[in-house]
Every structure is written in C-alpha cells, then in structure tokens.
Amino acid sequence: MNINLTLFAQALAFAALIWIIATRIWPPLLNAIEERQKKIAEGLAAAERSQKDLAQAQEKVDAVLREARGKANEIIEQAHQRANQIIDKAKEDAIAEANRQKAAAEAEIAAAVFRAKEELRQQVAVLAVAGAEKLLRREIDANAHKALLDELATQL
Image (tube, rainbow, N blue to C red; front, side, top):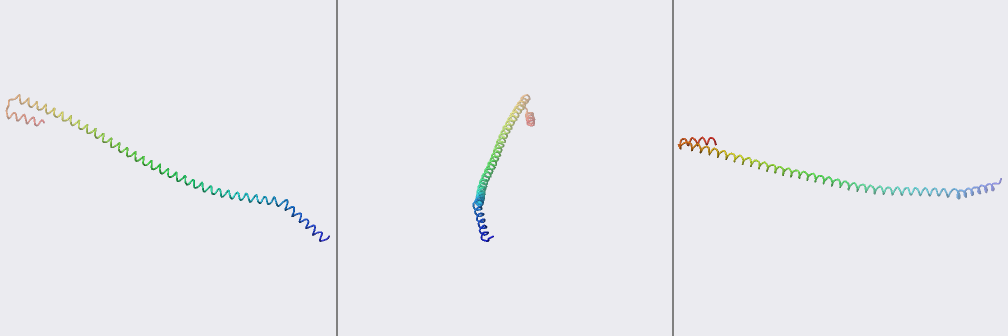
C-alpha cells in the first residue's frame, strides 16, 4: 500500500465525515441549542415579569391592607363615637327621668302638705267651735273663761 493513497483515502473519509456532520448533525444540534437558549431566555424573561408582577401584587396588597386598616380604624372610631352618644343619651334620659320623678314626688309632697293643713284647719275649726260652745254654755266668768282657754290651748 501506498502511503499517499492511504492518506488520500483518510482525507476523503474525513471530508465526508465533516460534510455529513455539517449537513446532517450540526444544523439540528444548532437548532436544538438555539431553541434551548430561546426557552431559557423566555424563562428568564417570564421570571422577571413574574417578579415584577409579584412586586406589583405586593404593592397592591399593601395598599389594600392600608386601606382596610384605615377603614377598620374609622369604623372603630365611629363605634366609639356611637357608644359615647348612647352613653350621653342614657345620661340625659336618666337625668330627665330623675327630674320627672323628683317633680312628681314634690307635687305629691305638696298635695300631702295641703291635705294635712286642711285637716288641721278643720280640726282647729272644730275645736274653736267646741270651745266657743262651752264658753257660751257657762256663764261668763273670767276664771272659768281662762281655764277653758288653757284647756283649748293644750288640745291644740
């Protein structure tokens, strides 16, 4: 065998191998690599978008929480105000009821005092008439008259 022919055959086989690799194996391999790079790039872009979306969602959540806390504080403040109003109203009602009961009691006391005075006047009138009657039955004697008046005074 000749070394030139072997070298030429090896070069031809090598060229054929390079041509087969360049036409049959290399393009699908490059396509797969490019497709993989594209998928990785899309994945990274999606991850960035997801992080941005997550940050925006977190900001929205924070805003909603702040708003909810504000509303809750407002509702609590309104409840405190309403409770104070109810307490003030109850105090006013209690004072009004106490004044009404006091006025009724004072009116009842005044009526009882009036009735007692009337009864006392009637009793005094009866005693005065009885005393006058006794005076008239007896003769007019200063000692007897004085004794009757003293007796009448003790009865009063």
